[in-house]
Length: 145
Image (cartoon, rainbow, N blue to C red; front, side, top):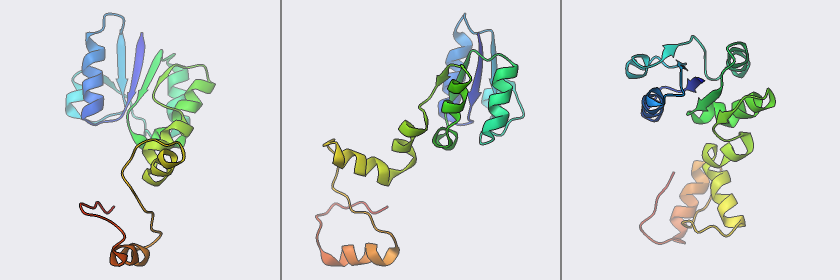
C-alpha cells in the first residue's frame, strides 16, 4: 500500500510514524520538509495547496491512500478532488472541512443544530466588537477572538 501524507506538523509526524509500523504500507510519500517525517517517508516536491499537482501525483503514482492534515487543502477541496478521481482519502471533504476552517461557520452551525456551545457574538469589525464589550451584555469569563 502506497500512502501520501500531506502536512508537516506534529500530527502528520505521528501519523507517518504509525503508518511506518503497518505491515501493509510499503511506501510513504510526504510533502513535508519536517526533519522527523523525512527520516520515515520519501519526500516529494509538492505544494500542499496546489490541488492539481497533488492530485496528478496521486494518480500517476497510484497512491492507495492520501492522508491530509492541514486545514487549508481540506477547505480548498483536495479530498473532494482526490475522491472524484477514485482515490481513497483520510480527511473530510470541502463541506465538512468548513467546520474547522471557519469558526464563525462552526458556531453558527452549532446554534442552528442545537449543539451545545458557549455563547458567542460575531463582529464584522473592531468597532462592532468594542460596542459589544461596552454594552455589558455578557458574563465573565469571556473569550474574544
